[in-house]
Length: 377
Image (cartoon, rainbow, N blue to C red):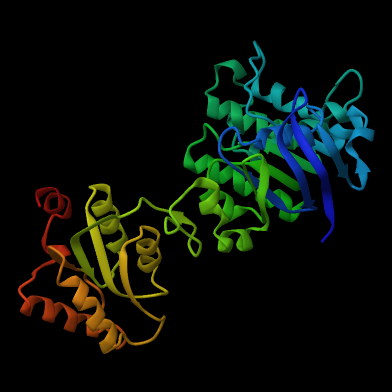
């Protein structure tokens, strides 16, 4: 893989004050990279420096093996487009007019749009689900609608590199996914190098090829998304409990309270919803015996619940049932899910039987209103 942009011992900041230092990174051509970090960590400062909007403090940036500082502005505009979070206030100008500003590096001194330019602008608006806004006054649009127009402007520039600062801010979930899908498609089908910041790590790990994590005035990790996720560095970045983030399914969960309120036997299609209802009401739960390829297993682990498990596709053993029983009998209530009984999980029925014989209060989830039950205990 060939690097497109290279940061060499780069330090960034304002007026000589360093915010992030010692940056050595490579952004790979045709790949999508997300910079993650808390507010004020220096993510936007890094983007603005790469885009030559602000001066570097130290080090160098190379684009296609040429120093950024040797690019003339019009030459750089054909190389990269930049979409920042700042909202421009533009009077009496339409969405199309704003998006068409992206064509200025290609239209000459007078900025006259050719038929080709108009088609490129229209296509950019469509890619951002913003074509219906082309004739509306920009200043009367919502923040989310303005964001889509500004991203379309960046696409209309037809750059090799697209830099975006929080492109999904102010957008509802549908348009967040639309925008990220568009950027991903551009990187795959057109070979665009996409560099963005996001506040949604769960979305970043699902759509980005590479991650860069910024904390404490430095880059604490960078590399392929899978490797970063498995390293546990995301927990360090956000100060999460080590169990809150599950690398397998990319979910962040509220930590389960430590109390022994409910023990759930088995898993079905609504079990994870039950986990979240219990945790959301500040109650504690345990669960077992789950198979380790079950989504419920990963959700429960991310919530730091007590989980008894068996290897994927292996039958639950007597030992695992005994361990689950010794813990479950100390919970206030036992909830049984409507799991489908088969050869590998049938011993969970034995667990339920033993708990009933022990005198535990056992309830089937389908027989109760779970919200009222939790609230009433």
